[in-house]
Length: 424
Image (cartoon, rainbow, N blue to C red; front, side):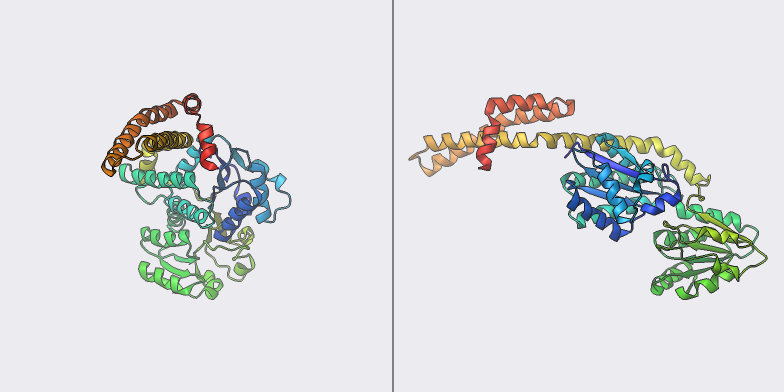
């Protein structure tokens, strides 16, 4: 499975927000999907990554199982007419292309806001879920640890992660522009997921403001409010607080919109009210814009702002790509070596069998000291004999010529027969 890595991707590049939210998964849904793969497909290694910008499945298989994967996604989301949405999915069946895509996504090269800081943690969580469901095998373990190491190099050696250019920071920049004429804007944050927390911390860039935080777990709202110097309010007072707020930022994980048109109709004011929906699925229904003075921005409306941090990141992209290229080369070399490791093991076993048989023949009646000496000498000889074939096999792997050498070794030492003897 070391050369059959594939991907199925639906992202902001291929699908608008209303399609992405149809196939957005939380932790429980991701784990159920992994269980479906295990039960209904031959997949034994898979990673499900679902964020506000993408839902992607990475898997190892000789077969193209994209049709089955898309059907299982539809099953989990109760979509009966998945055929209407198939064109939004991008299928990547080339091993190297799928690896490249996962590296690019994990480093933030594919993010809506280049270098988004959240993606690294999202990938780590997805990997943990794969491990929890026993869907992470040797290749996926090696791949993910290579990605984490690559991310560390990117942070240490480039300016790609400098600054605070992220979806949450872009939202704060937008808030700053929208409220520039308001001396002390009242800002209400609803929901403290990862994006909600980041928004709270990035609001320091807006100097004069009043910020109120509501979260289903009030203790968490209190902790963030204390950290940032804001005010926590009970979650059941959100609708009342919205009437006074100039800006409402919602990042609540909810199957249905939490904020609807009727929640704003009795709170009309002479000033504009700005609603930012950072949730996928959306937590603010689009009809709120029908309320006089209300402007709604969803996650697709929040584009990267021209800033020094973003410019640095864009300038660092060639360095990031070079680091990724080096990491991928090492991974591919390891992957190729894994293809020949069974042959190496068979060869070692074949030579060890010969050594043991010959030692047994000639050491009958030998003293303990003689036996130990012969054992030491023959083991040393065997290690030296096998060293060159192993090095040649690994070198042939890198040249893509391992199959010929494997065939020669199989014929010379009858390794297939040796394998049968070992298994019997």
